[in-house]
Image (cartoon, rainbow, N blue to C red):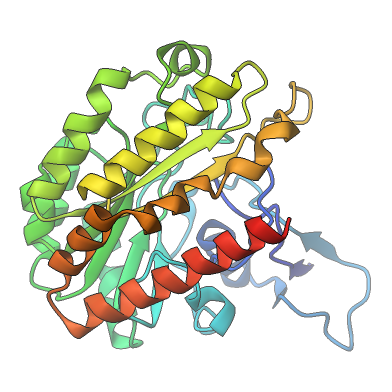
Length: 332
């Protein structure tokens, strides 16, 4: 069978549609390698001159996760410059891995992972993939599991990965049961933690499963353990007022100013097409948290965090992105 893989704005996990296609679609790449090993005639991100009738794939198909091999990063061109421009990599080149399918919570109403099974690869399988990535020259790896595995799996993984000398990042929940200090000592640095909202009523409505009071202490503990938390939030919920929207943005700004979150992003609410869509009136505020750039304490913490040239270069990349976002916001 002929199969053509075309990464698109539908290829990313956790959002139903994502305009930014500069993130290597790890799950789709794993499925691509699965078909190659079955003997299918597979193409990636290009129409071959001989292309005829065949299957075109724009997003993951949902093949049993535990049957998927690690992707062939050479075949899927993971070193492409467009995949190296996102902020999840401190050291370049970087790439994505995926230890688990979906999220162990799996109940957030806005998430594409809702109600999907949570399947976790064996620790040894992930370690082997990391070793292969190192041999190919990758210096940063971000695990794009919707939520990184908890408890004993995380403990065993950290013990085995700590000697591989690779910079690691992953997605966590506020209530993830992990040892932040152990993670920091094992190569983890950037941990992406979903805040989603600073409003208790919204967290209940989207079934996030956390409390507002839990948010700040988790960021404090992660930061003090030596990790560099990245805060994510969502605005534009159709049921939130301007005041509630600003409360979330102000919480993100406060976390950045205090240095508990080192970086952040705010997304616009993107539910399934059959649900009420986001309030477009508030889309213009997704970059408002960049105003922390005018706060001296924010810069004091940024300078204090610089421990190497890599830290400085990463900071410069973030500054360029922030000024670009602010400029675009002023122009619109």
